[in-house]
Length: 191
Image 1 (cartoon, rainbow, N blue to C red):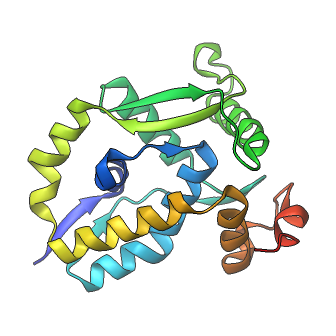
Image 2 (image 1 turned 180 degrees about the vertical axis):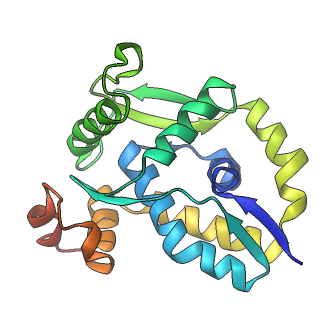
């Protein structure tokens, strides 16, 4: 029997690899984990690494959305495995990120005022504590070819503009874009 990791383990691994390069923007993080479920988890399974309890995604205002992923992020931030920084920088379509994050988080937490987000562009990074967990518990469960696949995947996602990433997701997984408020803008985008 091969190794098995949880969806939340992959979130930490993706934050850890490639010199702990942070993931900028909640939309990028959301789409990264969505594409992981759709494309990378099956590829890892072929390489002997099984996945369990991957976050569920639904079609939402800006494409695939997972309440599970927000809960994982909150949990890891709460136990000190990851940090979330508000950035003042902008990225193409970062305004979408601002809107998306507030709407998603507000809907997830409804009346819990202290957990509602402000409109901001966020950066997600792993802490030393989270890195220690990855090094002690997760890295020994994966092979070098599996790790290389994850590294290539993260590099591709972080190297795309947000518009490119959304265009890719919307064209490859149109059922998740059906409710998108920015579908027309994204699908009219020329690479």
